[in-house]
Each structure stands twice: as structure tokens, then as C-alpha cells.
Image (cartoon, rainbow, N blue to C red):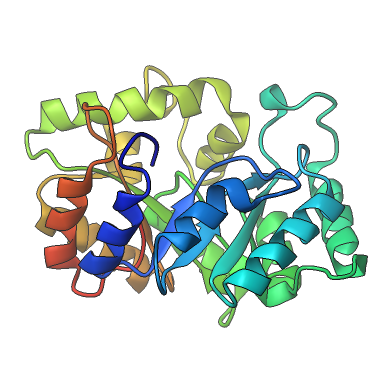
Length: 273
């Protein structure tokens, strides 16, 4: 959500009925710069960080930033945390243990970040278990429906499960997959945690090259008209999701507000953007 209309988009999404915005962005000691602007431009939406890289934000700084936002916008900021990927982080070792230590630090800091105010970007079983034990739940990214079902099985009932669903509003299969692969290629080429996750789900080498096989692309990207997207969102709910983050991908620049407006009309009670 960048650009000149940055402050107008959140208010428009709120008007459309969306209840949560998952936003990327740095988490500096002041924190307020990014997430504070989004909170200030809405009246009741939850703003969630999707997600803060724990290798780049010191726990004390993150806790201080959270406390600042919580004081000004009580109950409206959800802290999403993730271990990122090896190619993006120097000295990327023992990410699971690093997350455990990071959560320990958040718990011991005063003021800290309460368990129910944070979620983890979790893909594999160990991180999903940690998300269920040490946070409000999990926010898996770049995942098909079968991962949602598996995540719910691992986490059990109760913890929040909020997968992301990528959307291409295009009904022509060839064109839709072409657009989808512009999105999937980078993830499958450079970010090994996603590749490993697909392997755990039964995808093989042929599925993981050239932006993904049709099978993989169709599983991870909901393409078609708004009704087809609503069906995919429903499948994630049926598989155990409590909340679905819808991310629209288009060819154009700028935030695709019109596409979100189209989806809002069919999602019934749209939850997130």
C-alpha cells in the first residue's frame, strides 16, 4: 500500500467491510511511522504486521514500538513475527531456536508483547507448534488449502490460523497463470522455506521450476472471477482457517482497490486485505 493514496486506501477498505489489513514494512524503534499511519487512517480496523523479520528488529525495540501503538490504539495492532529465509539473512542459523529466544525476550521485556497480541509466520510443524504454544496463532504465507488442513491438525483447535491467499482476477487460464507466475517465480527461486514447504506437501522438482507447474500455481493462487476466489477462500475456512488474508496481484502499479471492491461484494463478510 504505497504511493500518494496510501492514507486513503485503508479507509476505503474499512468502508468496504474489511476488518484487518496485513501490511509489510520495517519495524524501527519508533514503529509508528508505518503502522501508526495505517491505524490513524482507520477507526476500528486491526492492523497486523505481515511480518516483522526477527533478525532485523531487536526485541526491546519491537516491544517498545508495540507498547506505543497499543497505548494510542488499544487492541488494534497485531504483531506478526517471522524468521525470514536464509538467503536474506546473514548468519541464518537455528531459526526455530532464534524465534524461541526472541519470544522469551518479548516476554521478559517490560512492557512486553502479550501472547494474544502476536502471531508467527509458520510453515513447518515445529514452527506451527510454537505458534500455537507461544502466540495467538499462525499466519502462513504462500500456501495451498492442503497446508491449511495440515496446519490445523498440527495446531489443534483454538489457536488462530490465518493463511494468506494470493488472488488473480482473470478467468482465462493461460493469462491467469502467466500473471500468477510473475508472482510465484521469485518465491520459488530464491526463498527456500517455501520450496521446502511444498516438498513436505508432496510437490516434486517438476512442480517447483519455471514459476511452478500448473498444479502448483493453481493450488497457491486463486484465479478466476470473484466467485471462484470466494470459493477458494471458503475452502481454506473448511480446512480449518479462522481468517483469510486476501492478496490481489495485478499487472498495474498502485493498490488494486477496484479489485478489492469486487471481492468485497462476494466474500460476504470480507476479513482482510
